[in-house]
Image (cartoon, rainbow, N blue to C red; front, side, top):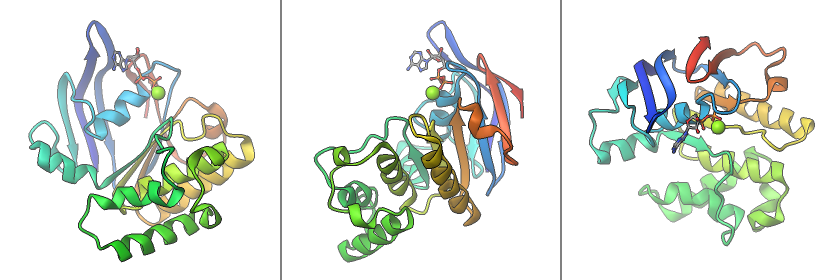
Length: 217
Ligand SMILES: Nc1ncnc2c1ncn2[C@@H]1O[C@H](COP(=O)(O)OP(=O)(O)O)[C@@H](O)[C@H]1O
Ligand SMILES: [Mg+2]
């Protein structure tokens, strides 16, 4: 469960989010939408604890992010997967290594990490690309590596920032099916997008931001 109580975030004189009240239940699938600059990325980064609110409180599973130590925040973050807009893949590492890296901070044994990584790459249809490097992949394949890395720690929450940004419609559809299947296994999914095509005919909840304010939820 994600809760925002009167959350504002300013960068200097620039208000990115203003007085946000929000509740996203466990297992929900939610789109955060709005034009560029509306505050979508900032909202995801606040949930991830990568930014602190200027005002207000954010609770993740009942834990107040303002009140926990950085050690506890690190532990909580391991339960949150983040698919970054620019993927943030390591160019010098293979696909396998890029995904496995998310488990290397845990105390899992090497053999277990390998097994889970193989499974995850199979789930996103990249089993034949394990030894490739990111730059040898298409945009859609890189996106799937980023999703695999975000998913491998079995997160309670998956955050994705413009995950279909530069992808063609067929690949976009595949990626959305992937998010839906992840969600059906119980993970709360929050996707930020300015792509209105993605939202057409969707049955999912849409939270709309304009200039840092929620105009629909
Ligand atoms: N690190 C930052 N420093 C200064 N301003 C920022 C920073 N991050 C975001 N902003 C500003 O906050 C507003 C919301 O940005 P953002 O959350 O990236 O919007 P969106 O993802 O909807 O395009 C914008 O005006 C942006 O310029
Ligand atoms: Mg953004």
